[in-house]
Image 1 (cartoon, rainbow, N blue to C red):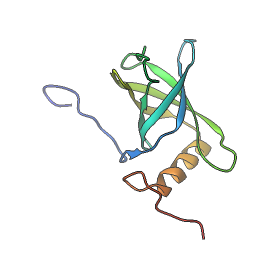
Image 2: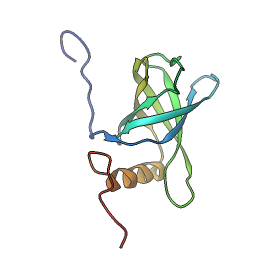
Image 3: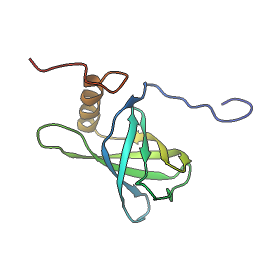
Image 4: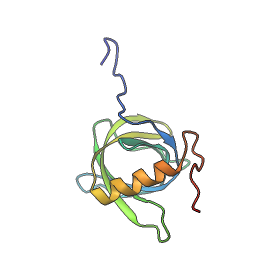
Length: 124
């Protein structure tokens, strides 16, 4: 943390990637559907709110992000996250807890995509 504000600390680079996400606030708040990731890393994501929706979340709030991670039959994965920042467009969230299967699925998707969000590997 700098003297004038909070510095972002990421342990992996963010990759542009759009995935459908439901945001479920901890403590029983109503699930919010229609969100999409804008960029993702193994440590967090920026999740954009649906057009016309003002994010009703606050920094440090704990949420579950429920999203689909590719494959032939997309499966839903739940990731616990802490809201790091809120903007008019959405929220930056740091992942705090997810299982090994979710980590592997996310890792595979990120490995297939280059830094620009393009596919880098092909199946042969």
